[in-house]
Length: 369
Ligand SMILES: NC(=O)c1ccc[n+]([C@@H]2O[C@H](COP(=O)([O-])OP(=O)(O)OC[C@H]3O[C@@H](n4cnc5c(N)ncnc54)[C@H](O)[C@@H]3O)[C@@H](O)[C@H]2O)c1
Image (cartoon, rainbow, N blue to C red; front, side, top):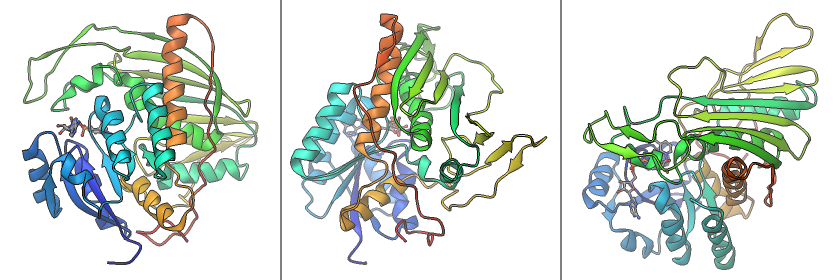
C-alpha cells in the first residue's frame, strides 16, 4: 500500500453501495476497509461480496482511527445525522446526494467540518466523468461562444417499479428534484458557474404510489413532496437555464441537457452517467458533430469524488465534489419549491466556485497529473 492510500469506511450498505465498495479497485489511493448499516446483515453481505475486511456497526466504524473518509450512503433522511457523527468523530465525509434534507442541516455540516478541520464532499461525482469534463472543456475553450442559456430535462414515471425500498423517493428529501436534480444542477454549475436567482412551480400529481417491485409489492406509499418540478435558473454569468424534473411522466423524448451559446449548441450527455456522446452544432453547420472525449473515466466511476477528496487530503488542494457546491445545489433545489409556494422569484443566499477541471491525459486510476 502506498503512503498516499486513504482508508474509507462506508455507512449504508444498500442498493448503491457496491460501486463505492469497489472504488478501491479503480483508484489506487483508496482502500475500503469497513462497511456498516443499521441492518447488520446488509453490511455483512456487502463486505463479503466485495472483499471488504470488516462489517461492523456505525459506532465501531466511526471509532476506527485508521479510517479517514466516511462515505455516507444512507437514505436522505440520515445524510445530515450520519454526516455530523462522522465529522464529530474527526473524519472527512462524502455524502450521497442530496447533501442534507434542509438548508439548516446542510449548513450545520459545513460549519461543523470547518470547525473540526475536516472535509465535506457530496455526490454526484458524474461531472468528473469523461463526458461532462469534455463538455466543460468545450465551453471553457469557447467552442460554442458565450453561453446564453441551457435546458435540463429528467422525466420518468418514478422508481417504485424497480427499487427494492422506494419509499424515500416520495418523502422529504426525495421527489425528482432532490433525487435527480443534483446530477443536472451540478453538471450545469460545473459548466456555467453559480446561480443567483430562481423561480419554480411544482405539484404532486399522484398522492399515493403503489410499489410493484419486490419485496414490498403492493405496499402503498404516501407522497409527501412535489413529484413534478419546473424551474428557471438565472446564472451569475447572465445565462438563463430551464429545468424540468418529474416522476409523473410516462414517456419523453427530450434531451438531458443542452447548452446554447452565441455561436453554437452543445448537446450534453445524461449527467447520471460518466461517458458520452458529446455533440456540438456550430453556426452555420448543417449538422451535429460528435466530439471525441478528451477525458477518461467514461465507465461507471462512482467514487471518483471520494478519490479526488483523498488526493486533496494528502496534498492540501481543494476537492472538486465539495460541500460548498453541494450546499449551493441544495439551496437551488429548495428555492424552486419555496418559489412555487410563495409565488415569487427567490434570490439565492449561497454561491460557489466552479470546481477545477480535471487535467487531460491522466493515468487511469489517478486524478492528479
Ligand atoms: N440506488 C441508486 O441507484 C442510487 C444512485 C445514486 C445515488 N443514490 C443515493 O444513495 C443513497 C442510498 O440509496 P440506496 O438506493 O442505496 O438506498 P437503500 O435504501 O438501498 O440503502 C440505504 C441503506 O442505508 C441504511 N441506513 C439508513 N439509515 C441509516 C443510519 N442512520 N445508519 C446506518 N445505516 C443506515 C439502510 O439500512 C439501507 O441499507 C440515497 O441518498 C440515494 O439518493 C442511489
